[in-house]
Length: 237
Figure 1 (cartoon, rainbow, N blue to C red):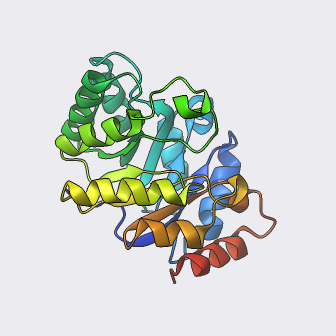
Figure 2: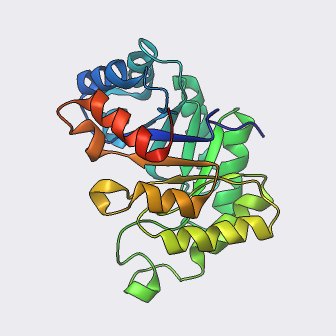
């Protein structure tokens, strides 16, 4: 399975805002920074403008992968995966993030549907915020993220979201992937604005890691300068 991002390490801007003009301006300003690996767009842009228009705005200035994060896709009934995958593919999206909290049957069906459409698939398990797992009074069993990752591995997935503000959990899940003989590529949100350190999380994640950064980048006065600084911290040129 081809890697979604060609770089071993990169910064992936999390474009979690609703202004299409702001999105296009951000892409235009930072795309030439070598360490920018892809763009992650969320439901705000997607629902406000439609994914085809979001893709069109990005393609005016960039050929880099566009990752759609539906926040959280993979939580419906199994057969809806086909509809989701077709909409994303038809819009020109390159890859999607799934957080399969609806169980293994939905997870397997949605992965298969997305792969059938030629989409890259990134599977998440543990999120960054408190109150997610039962150990912190959350709804999900403590073992749930591990099971989500294991199910994804069985379906051939090699790219995963792990929480950037929890380096100890990154190490735990990285060991899981290694034990399953998976040459994993990891993506981490929860950095900078949510307290995660790019350097600490990067060390925990290993050689193939992409730092997902939102507010620290798109709220910066000088976005290109912020992108350059983030890439330097990551070790990208």
